[in-house]
Image 1 (cartoon, rainbow, N blue to C red):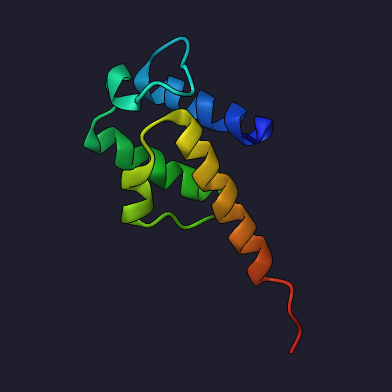
Image 2 (cartoon, rainbow, N blue to C red):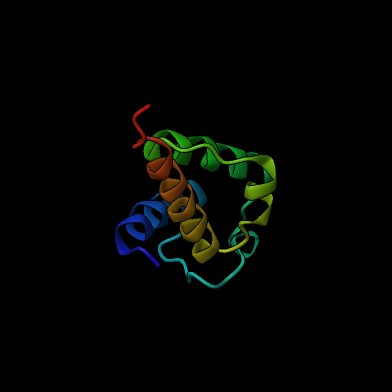
Length: 86
């Protein structure tokens, strides 16, 4: 798990959910994440990290660890798309 991404995502979810601490392996719904907050968080993460997260990807992100893993994977895909010269 990327510690830099974890720090940003952890802060984002703690602020949105108004909780002092998050366990990376506890389902976010246990902290009160609902569909509206989930959409808000996805939109904010897309903006902060300049990535696209599909509805299917968003639905599969149930824990903070899964969110960080998805952001890391999305950043890797984005990095792989920008380097080729024709």
